[in-house]
Length: 209
Image 1 (cartoon, rainbow, N blue to C red):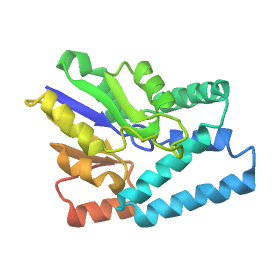
Image 2: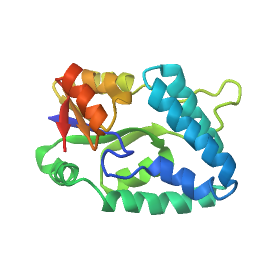
Image 3: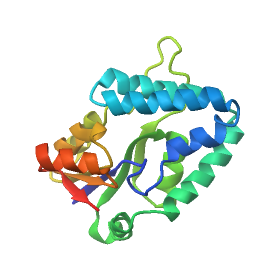
């Protein structure tokens, strides 16, 4: 049996659901403010993607901002985004999904994408589940962000299915640890610089065009 774990943003499709939700909901409220915050988060991750604290802070920041939106607005935009993502699904990913049942494989989304979107995508593709991040105000005292550590989730799935071969798909080296800890790590829709780094230093990571 194989267990497939898919990141969502720019991985299962050439589309970024989290960024799209940000643009469709927060950006119209105050374009200058949220453009500045958006660029800050992008630069921060591009420069310091290898520092766990920075990654966690970025995830907390975007989820906390989204938590101020009305549930109806989040629901409406998330449904549109999930539809777009499944429509643009990568052909190789689609092939894995289509043959899941006959091969008795398991497929999960393992992503930092908002849960409201991840659940809709998983349901539309008839996957086995998802691990994602709930939209909450994580700057409240005592509130911890769950499903942030992808390697820990991968380890738990390995314990539950010790004989399964685990595949992990992502688009960027921010997910380097789970890419290396999976039996097969695959970069998909990666940038040229990401591919180059992987080819030079992490050759066990496969690269899909």
